[in-house]
Image (tube, rainbow, N blue to C red):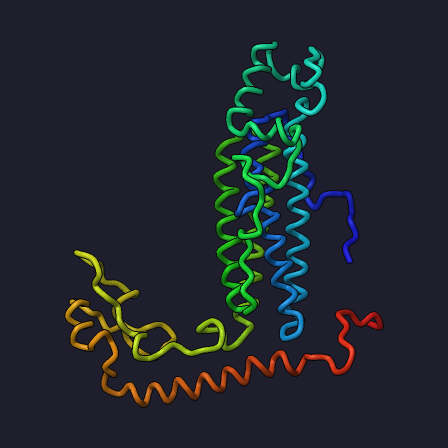
Length: 310
């Protein structure tokens, strides 16, 4: 159950109208790395998490709700940046607010032209108000959402989502000199960092959480690091210990020869039989563990989502 409080989480302010920046800010309203995408992603992920991980369900719903509040902040900022576009500017009145911060009709027409050149749909279709579209007028799409039904996978997706959103806010700051907007963007950017650390802690609290999902990595194909380009650089990604796996990388200098010698990697390397049996045992254990996580929380009899006695 949602209850809307009309006071913003952060008091968004702008110094002056700026339709051009309003259009750029649409990226964080209806873009693939924006607040709507984040809110819907975490909201969607929460459903599958409720039974096996009720604490993570609570976290995901809380962060999803905060993302909706951020969407409101972004939308309010866009609307304030368009002061004059939706009312006075359409009137072409000389005493409109936008006319007070620009010099004359030519300046007014130039700023309108700049906004419309960037995204003609902004004013033509939406009338100048924020809608779920990005800065190019492309409608928001559900394909922006990553929700895979495995919480460890989803949490890793969320770490990437928060990282991308932070980067977009950083870039947006370069395109405005309005100190009030900088304050708003700094708040939103910092909350992305806070969410990142929350998701990171949630992932760490689920053990085991690697590799993602249920099945263990096949030991026959785990260690190889192939030299697939001229002048391949050596580093901790292709030499030394594979972190947390108890094995070391096997650098394949000549992949073509290796594939031929192993008959397309179908000939088992020495000791593979033992490793495969260990993998199969691990798969059975993880399958039972993951299954029991859900089964033990399945309700008996009539299923209901909420317990109103609490």
